[in-house]
Length: 242
Image (cartoon, rainbow, N blue to C red):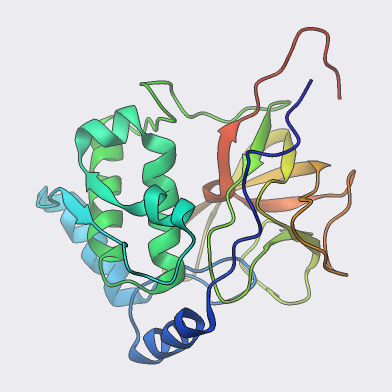
């Protein structure tokens, strides 16, 4: 049968890190944040990323979050040396690290995103999950949600695949340990800064047991969110139908 949890517990930032996040935002540090809060990284950060890809100057990035006010799970997910080997052998964790750093407004987000984009371009757009397995979400597949620490947990399930009306144009939120099923083909959208976003329409198959929130999306609810919130594919067992 399908697993009901990956062994995670409810993970929220301590008040100290929430305060640090607010300070980081005021300083204008790069970070995408979740769909319900801060939005995309600043234009200068994006420009730096694009230049890094074009010039091939992105280097391996060393991350160490030990000592940060984070649950040990998230510390492990983001910490390590991120390079081409990690991109192919541990791609899911690479993407988790990016989202964790974005949520913290960590200045190393720029370097890590630069490296990821460069390696993706080098591999002709191919991304990986783990052990060299290609990460390529398709219609009908089910995926775990990655909802890293931030000041406001939850990923908005949008009514439309557009970067507008963030606070109102959605059906609710999905959280860590949720499972969604992809419906149809992805939709590409370019925002006002010229950055490409890939959206998927999904149906909630399992909602998180770790969060109780009046705005939580219920099983069966459908909506859109970005590709970056899809974590690893749920392994189906023989005879399982949803």
